Image (cartoon, rainbow, N blue to C red; front, side, top):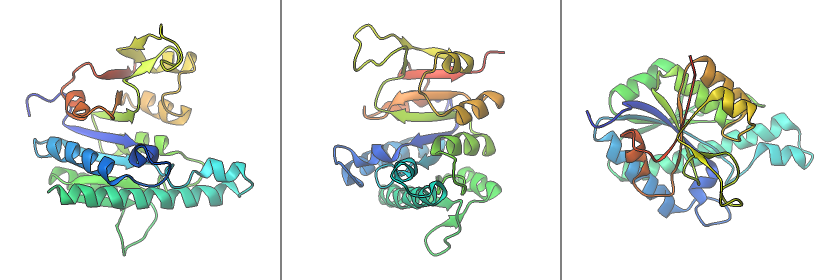
Length: 240
């Protein structure tokens, strides 16, 4: 345990991360790889909570853009996150790690209802906890859910898994001279208009001094390295 900088974290996964190279749905190979990495650090004593998106199945904003009522579209998106959470739970349990799904929308037949103190107790007992169905309210993203849950459970860091190795001053896919930040303040993220998380999530983390670690989840072993404090991403922090 002494090798790890963070002992309780919240890992934010997008729904798109689970579909891998597929155009839709869940790639079992990706779910299994992520499950193994999560199980490995849990069995070494790190308490891991996860918030997962649903964009690989349905995006509320996309539905709204096509004429669907925004609140209704967001509720459908919340249910998509539950499907992803259940799939990831299955992969984690098959890898030998106990795991609970807690939903902000009650559905007793398939998962637990989110209760803050119960979630913390699961973590203390060494179980992975996956938060599903967002906050249970429309108009809030899973980024905001991740920030909220990280603060609620007393996480030491919000780990945002992406397809790039941190935050850049411009798109590294388009510009060879793009500069990666090792550390950057919340205010700099906001003033520079960097697309890290939505503004509500950034503000919530800033107000509660919750560091965000943005890292590349597609490189195997990066979750472990990030927890050890290795330079595998960008840390967003509050400047006192």
